[in-house]
Image (cartoon, rainbow, N blue to C red; front, side, top):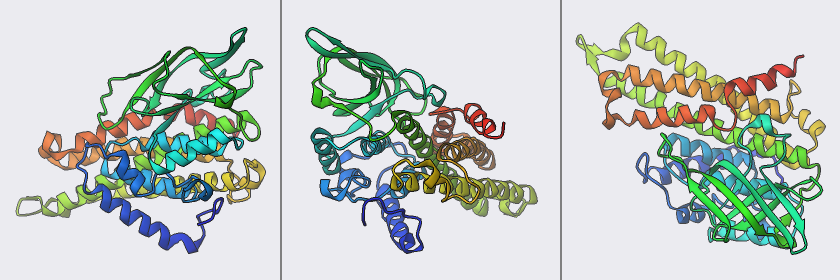
Length: 381
């Protein structure tokens, strides 16, 4: 598979189906809520999907990454894949450099896990980056703090979004064991996810650790936020489909008044509503993934990307629509699944609580529905 190929062509359907089936089989060996080892992620080639072939990656696109993200949500397992996927994505937005290329190689091999520390609120995309580089007599140093950094605890390398002394946004690569860098975990209601606070206090920054964006930095930062939003939308779509499948299986076997409860009209309507929400969410997520894949191919050319969408949506609007609707629907679907499971749905053994916690956290992560809808509404003003 060649780098830069937009994987929405009919020829890739079979490849996508195979990737989805293999991913689902592998994740089936991990129990819900358990953590999948990074070595498994690397052995399956998931960590190197977007890494170019010359750095031992698959040279695929975000379309393939989205499949893995969706299946991780369906299986509701814990992993470091979200941070690694964002790190690989941001490396693709950077200008080529020996240090960046070396990181891509070790990421694809699974010998180092990386993540990106940036502002998690999409409303702050145009604000000053959370870290800043100061230039003094002793050289360059970096300081700052970022919260809700995905998979920060346990990462080997951190890519810090910073402003250089001239105020230009850049990425600074820092090893996790560097003196002056502290990654503290955050207590989460959703135990399947790991987020942390990254604090940096006057760490020396060599020139080869400062990586510049390939193109307009503000556009690249917006693209990073778009990737994060769509990643969470994919996760929510996967867990929604898992909840519908579990609910349908349950109402077919649970009997009341001498017949399966799935034969009752109220239950049928509830399941039908869940299916309609998932169908709409699928269309929105697929459109956003298609836009992101096209954006990679067109080198952040917004006009070229817009030609790939019949209604002329830009990448950010497509991502906002997918994230706001899908994550809201996931909470409603999971709540309805718990209700249709009756008393069993409220027990620990049902496992639905894991999906509900994850769906609820997804709704607020990387942009609340209200914040994203404000962006969508601004398009029509």
